[in-house]
Amino acid sequence: MSKIEHIHCLIIGSGPAGYTAAIYAARADLKPVLYTGLTPGGQLTETTEVDNFPGYPKGITGPELMEDLKAQAERFGTQVRFGLVTKVELNSNPKRVWVDETIELTADTVIISTGASAKWLGLPNETRLRMNAGGVSACAVCDGFFFKGQEVAIVGAGDTAAEEATYLAKLCKKVYMIVRRSEMRASKAMQNRVLNTPNIEILWDSETQDILGKDTVEGAVVKNHKTGESRTLTITGFFVAIGHKPNTDIFKGQLDMDDMGYLQVVPGSSKTKIEGVFAVGDCFDKTYRQAVTAAGSGCMGALDAERWLATQPVH
Image: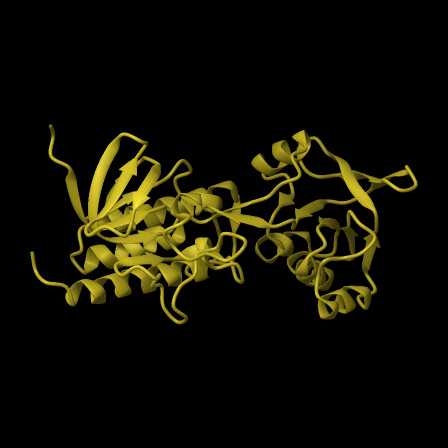
């Protein structure tokens, strides 16, 4: 029987949080090993233009940014491996981890940076235009700037949708807010903010039937399911704000989560309830969800791991 590989610092996930954790862990001589997951680089690999990450005054594409972070992590000795962690036993000492259901590892520390996945409507043209950077986005704060002075639509009815609609309204000439029911789920304060913004038009009881455009968004077909009437919106940007799902299913029953599945940490740190296990990036952060905040939390995770290891007996 082959010997099980033991890792000093294991990082699960490869977005800005994971790679930043790797950079700091490698510089602290923790000899990190990072498993990328099925989407190396995370959500940013689906983003064409990134204009708000510090240090890139001319902007950069999402895939290029993630390649830069990966190269920097590898420069200091991080082992970056392609593979999906499919099972964990975090309460054991050392922690036990399985990759692709077949490879078993043990680890002194685990930094979780599995991120979150945006929820989409599932329309064929939505997928096509999103993958081709054609004006479909799940992040108004990231991409709203590109639609300055234009007309856009946003789907959703919660606090995030309301916040992003008002954000877009400051940049765009007109914002159509497509709400499936006759009321919003957002807090009263957020609802009032939307209702008092003159260039937001709410389309109640409505669902998107199609997004129009060959290479970029040119319009959207919206149907009122109470009246049966369809309407074509002339827009250049389409934003989806119906929520995110944190990629944390494999940690259920072992780590504390909220009702949405976001991992819970000790406030002001990356520490989970299990010693030696840390959570960084969008798998715990449902408030900011930005590349730069994810990177910052990755730094915290590596520093917390280093400090925790310093308190443990030397093997």
